[in-house]
Image (cartoon, rainbow, N blue to C red):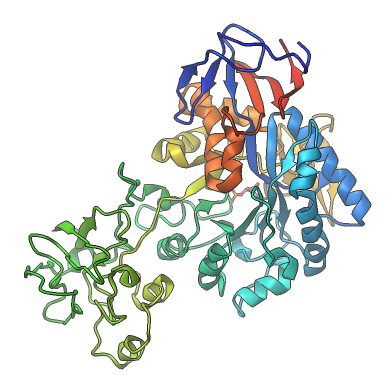
Length: 546
Ligand SMILES: CC(=O)N[C@@H]1[C@@H](O)[C@H](O)[C@@H](COP(=O)(O)O)O[C@@H]1O
């Protein structure tokens, strides 16, 4: 087969986002019985590969040459889009590398690339991570964010906060929610279009939930560089146990940190027909939970300026003291309530106040001076502020995040990989966490890395003389095969975790990389049961073992 030859095929099956195989009647590849055709792989973490460390900077030419080498090598293993990842660096290095990565990811350049993987932006893993969970990151580079966003701007440089016009440009950051200033910064990053991933952290369950409530949508290499899961303090890993999004697309509100248990007073719901816009719900010592005026036959009902009507129905109280209920109107981001031990200034009822036109004090105990002050403000309190008011027992909009996982059989036990996949199959993103030593030609032994040494042995790499794993040398196609084996799922389902799922997590134009229809990027891979058998990039054959 030559790259110029496009033949209609009839026997290749296409992997659709659900992981099912759908027969195709026409596609631009040769006819080969039994082969699977998938979109290309997308890698959200490439720290380096083929001898190149993307976090190292000596001069521009060396960096760009090394970068191109990585792009060529990744394309051969079916990764046609990736996020170059910088591991906790010095300020000076960020200031040199980030502007270069912006250029290297610009649309002009990616369009001209032939048989090379495209850079989709960058992933800044650190330095706002927890020193106790630094893994192989140099602890001397780790810092906190006492000045909030300003600390990040100073560290990464102004350049990283200028948004370009590129559609397929992704800025991702891995941060620890237990590092000073980070929880507060997350919403600001999200507002600016960043993808926030939580990782390298000792975060408690509550901090983890707050991280997600504040806008983080991913977890970085689940299980690695975070505490193991305790059943009463499930931490970051426990986020996989959050309720799934319902079929209507509505996110189920989970209960936040459950510390009330047996001491929780039995909550009561008092129903009253609403007469007007919901009034503040007061919480008192005597009556720890009182849902007032929002619970009636019709639920919350308000119509402000004739704009919308919110019908919250089916409020119910769980045995654990959570009050659940939901508005079926997707445009109404309605309600959470959680009760139990009485927190001070606890927000009882959260409505999307601007939609409803309700004043900022709605649902809040305005008897405290602290609340009275914000009640005078013009708009509703932002979610972050709301969360800060509670003591972790309040509920919130917390969506189950995507998670990346290193399925090399070394970083995570195969059973743990399988558990995580089965807990949240739609959120599973395979990553190789590739380091510069991802280079099949490199022999086992000790090799220099920055001021340290790394040892390559038995398919893994560690900081020499220690047991600290230092990223992996796992090619992504092998991770796909491993996941299929570890979890006992068909290869087609595992492929989705390296293609559709990361693309969905990165969003925007990247999602167009993983379709095979008009308007999509013409990249694809061919697999058989043993692994990758061919790669096409931009409609051209990179290689094919036909
Ligand atoms: C680039 C990066 O940060 N990679 C981390 C590494 O830092 C950590 O040491 C290792 C094991 O973590 P664990 O010992 O906590 O499982 O996982 C990943 O390889």
